[in-house]
Length: 112
Length: 112
Image (cartoon, rainbow over all chains, first blue to last red; front, side, top):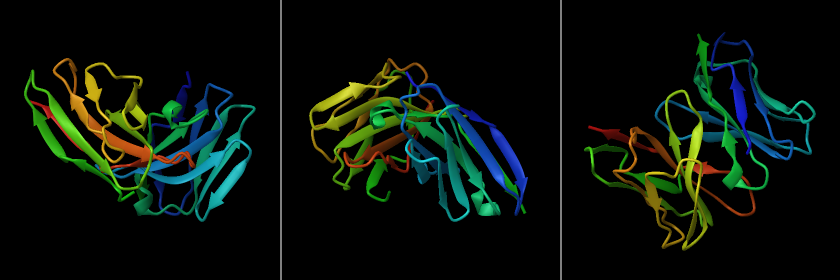
């Protein structure tokens, strides 16, 4: 089955800097890649997603890039703010949500 | 997101007891899921259900049971057979039309 690895496990940046989180997946048939943000003790919330027919997607300060050949995708946050501090999860699925697999998460800390 | 309600938020279980976590959604989603979250790990799928009266085991179903008698409800029972049940449990749902998974607020289960 699909295996998703996520790096780094923790990331600390200064406010205003950029943050990049990377994920790799094992199954070349995966075609949907969402990113979730989870604040402490709260539910994960979808912040951006990308499908395999697109190489990049942006939404304000957040962007996701996908390299299908290398089987990796990345989350980019620009102009980071303290409220960006949270745990971020990547995920990958092939056909439907039953086979969606999540990375272990990255704890991002943005220092003011 | 606000359409998925989990209860209780915090639950304590004694050794040998079964406990049931409630999950209700008013999003008219067909599919529902239960995930377990442990510190430093991603979300792991316990059970999922695509339609009423049908459900399937996920990656870590041992020691858990579910039912899907109504489209809106997908309760999870943590049985005494689950040897390490202390974790954060997330219920989720999704529609057929989109891959997006929406999560509930989660339930903290602690064995005392």
